[in-house]
Length: 158
Image 1 (spheres, rainbow, N blue to C red):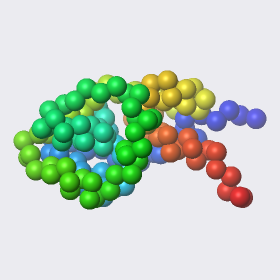
Image 2: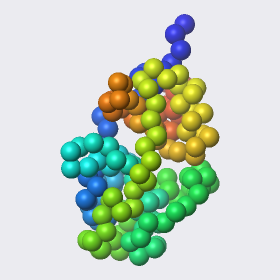
Image 3: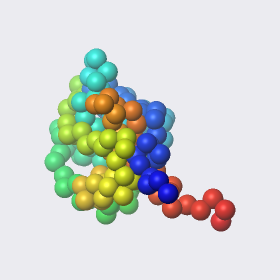
């Protein structure tokens, strides 16, 4: 039996947003695509970071400035998984000067397409992350989220 690897679980269509997008544009992008985070790309389309609802919320509470937070809060704050359009509206994201590049996390965490899924799960858990990029020969080919990993546990016959 072959081990399950990143290629087997990843989503090959990676949604991304430009680093020059404004916070209102980011909020709309996340809501329209029903996602909690995305890859940030530069003008050449190269990944330069990741941005999430928690970055957006942190920026809104800090008046548009980046807020450093402990990654461990990803697993303890239930509100991050229940954001909806009214929550975003309440943030009053009207500052067109703050860009995604100002609030994103510049560190990109990635795994190779042949990484065993158990190692991917351990990386996400140990790093308190919700997503990891998947690469092949240094090119971005997919993304794995915690939801993708949970999908492995679902028994379709139940």
